[in-house]
Image (cartoon, rainbow over all chains, first blue to last red; front, side, top):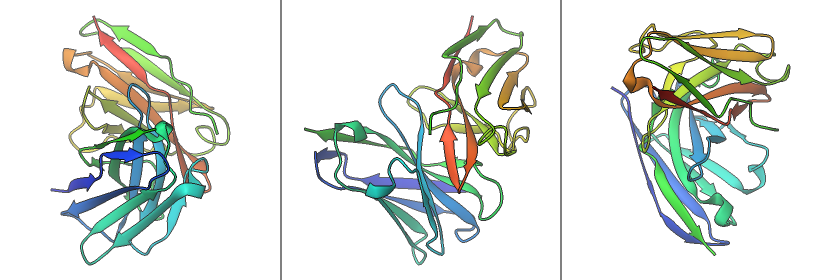
Amino acid sequence: QVQLQQWGAGLLKASETLSLTCAVYGGSFSAFTWNWIRQPPGEGLEWIGDIHHGGVTNFNPSLKSRVTMSVDTSKNQFSLRLNSVTAADTAVYYCARGGVFGGSYGELDYWGQGSLVTVSS
Amino acid sequence: QSALTQPPSASGSPGQSVTISCTGTSSDVGGYNFVSWFQQHPGKAPKLMVYDVSKRPSGVPARFSGSKSGNTASLTISGLQAEDEADYYCSSYTGNNNLIFGGGTKLTVL
């Protein structure tokens, strides 16, 4: 059974850096892509980007200049950093497992519990 | 790039069928067979219902089916049940290793 557990700071001030980590329990860590998605309160989903265990990353063009993702294969964890946050970055952030690397895209089959990040101005 | 277009709301009575559309362009929905559908209940993480246009993950009832024609993908829920009331989101590969979501559809079971 695959489980994703995420954590990170929930309250930030404008211009600070958002930092979240997601731990993967069960299943293969190396075979899949690992994604971050966010959802502003009352709004829809927005894909932030993904990372493979080898460190290959892909980002949403609208966030690319502010996003960094990393992976710790020794712990089966991956992380998101979003710098220079503003109130517009207030959202529930989810980590999710994607399809097999190089295969299907959008097959987000396991999700973390979500982390509400609030940015105050 | 703009979000995929979904109707804001849909509804149906128990036992009926309902279809939710997801319209994109030839650069996303129409160009690739990587359309997924997610169900989200309030306060919960999204759940994958359909991927690769029409494939269902293990455990998802056969009442949920996906299809695509041109630049529009569709999710059909047959034999509507009360627990199907939720928000539904589509997603599509856009090329260049990017993913885009639809704006979401709120499904009400009357």
